[in-house]
Length: 214
Image 1: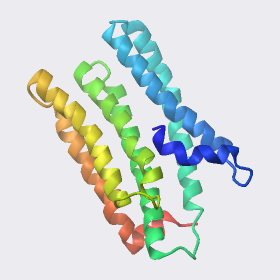
Image 2 (image 1 turned 90 degrees about the vertical axis):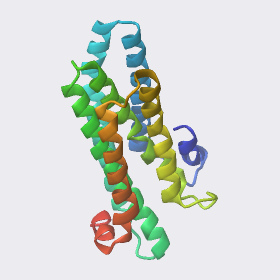
Image 3 (image 1 turned 90 degrees about the horizontal axis):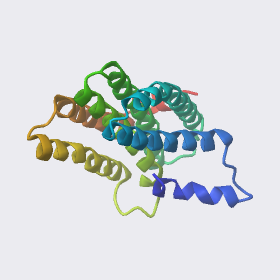
Image 4 (image 1 turned 45 degrees about the vertical axis):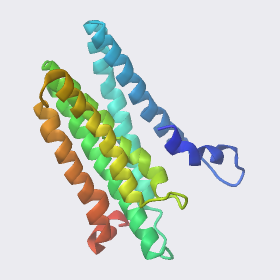
């Protein structure tokens, strides 16, 4: 997460560029989610269920903040269309728009399922893991299409995301001897929809029109 934001850090010290308050707020909320996730995991491991549940209810406010902030960022990107863009750059920006959309939908879906199934331990913790990992691709996309990248931006985003998603699957297989249904169905569903959102839809005319309607 830190590396993918590196291109933006220089803007803070630059007199020619502006880092908006909403971008800084979004970054704080984004980092806050992973800090909370780490704390919640530790509390659960230490059997401090009461505090874990209290922070769990408080996470609803962080969740709402992330969705709202993400939606504002998405709208800003959609408003930045420029008719002088090359076809290749237009496709990369369209992919970025659809990647953010997929992240918001996936994060919200996994989180809400985790909340609904909070009394079913194994399902709950896996949905929360998926909710956290679902935001990785949006972060990687910030650097995936930079000129110095040696491989295609879409391919880089997909590969890095799937490496992270494979980890809980491997843990399930090694520790429990089988893959939990949440991961067995959740990961493939996420992968298929992600490929559609950032790989296929951006290459279509209707996908580009929907990405930049303003």
